[in-house]
Length: 370
Ligand SMILES: *Cc1c(COP(=O)(O)O)cnc(C)c1O
Image 1 (cartoon, rainbow, N blue to C red):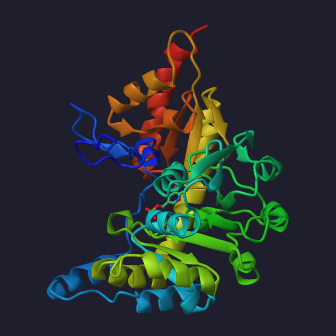
Image 2 (image 1 turned 30 degrees about the vertical axis):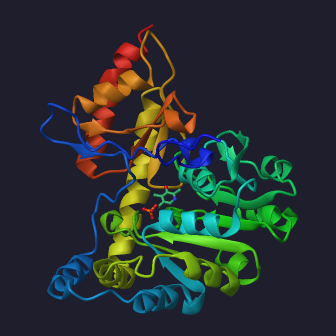
């Protein structure tokens, strides 16, 4: 057999389309409002910034490889057992670790039609087979997920609420999904936006993790805590799952600045409450204003919303994206999520929110021309 003239990645690696983050620049525009990555408009807690600065004096030291004090701060806030928490370099790190621990070549991993793109990437990176379950009204559909389960299924990802749709399924539905899954399938509840949700029938899934052997909840400091730049995620999982991912994670997968800032952020309840209140007010305002312009908006429980801009009068979501960008308003094109007729808008500062609505109003004049 002819040997290759250079190293060749595994076929499943070459099947991956690399994740493209939200844009952060608009050429030729001085002032930018980045509303493309679901970042916090209020920034990080001042206490977290202070803790980050203080760490600059200790850059020669390795961080605590188990992030013990951070896990204890998380455990204290949520009433959890710190030994069942594992931290990651962003929750993306944990999604990859969970997948590579449980999915091997030929194994299947399920996620939903407009689910977070990292699931597909993680499954392919592990050599597994991505299996897509249909959604109903841009919302995860438990029966559709269950219909895709086979003897080869090893993992099911559910973003609840989901990004980029902003929709969620009630806890009763999550429990129904879990109850019908085979016991050897790992159910990953990605609750990156849990802090924002204001619904009585929602749960991030802590209780389900506590009482099951095959459920993991992942969380992040990138959204409400405003620490996306530091890359901090965590998961709450059965002890045997923690054991598995602790074997394969990077031994120092969180840096010391992330650990210190994360602890301070977790303890600053006032900042979290402020961020929740800001989101509650402006998510509702943006939704009402944009619907008032005659655009369809998918009801969201997160810190972002999906605006529907189908082709009309020769203009579509791409044109809207370019028009907004020309005013420094950067939204997320979600064509790679199978949603070419939509733009995702992160709830921003009051200034940014008002500018977006004003710009959409101008765009709609052309778009909706009778
Ligand atoms: C933003 C986001 C994450 C978090 O990613 P980090 O790696 O923690 O920054 C995870 N899942 C979903 C669905 C997200 O939108």
